[in-house]
Length: 227
Image 1 (cartoon, rainbow, N blue to C red):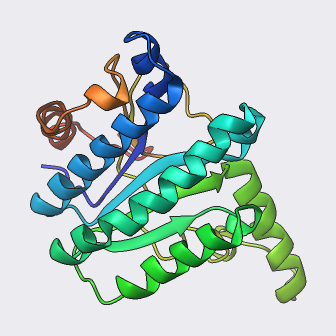
Image 2 (image 1 turned 180 degrees about the vertical axis):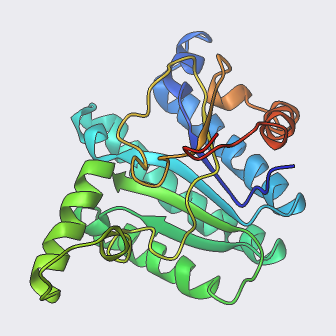
């Protein structure tokens, strides 16, 4: 049976979920935040070590300003509200991505949440915000050029400068919402991950469907390039 340490999820479908109910897209994002909470608690309960969620990509800045403002406000409110949940369930909060583009208040909230949950030893929940894999790799290479003086750059060198340097590779990557693409998410880290796609829109994604995917993962024959 496969060992499962790290699950990554592309949380797609909030906007379409809202449209189907004749609501604004922000209504979908608000309900999607509840799913984040449910899946995080469940991941902690089943003993998962790492859960990485694609919350806001580097490309999402192309969306309408009103939606971007709502998403940043929602994230701020979510972290404020869920700090108690993190502590209760022994969840360490982490982020990947470049948060320098967000307002000072949100940056402060992110930093405080990281600091206040640093002692937690259970699940590590990572939110990918203002994250894009190509941007991550570009930033990593630039850091290497500034700090390293080597004739050869190895895979290990690159991995040590990625946002995920302290997180193991992705074992299982899930995308909700019916689309079947990676959308610039953890491209390096997902090189040998098992991919799961579902038509379920993110606000409707349940612990039951999550558990069914995990059950399927555990019986997959993972070869990692071997026979």
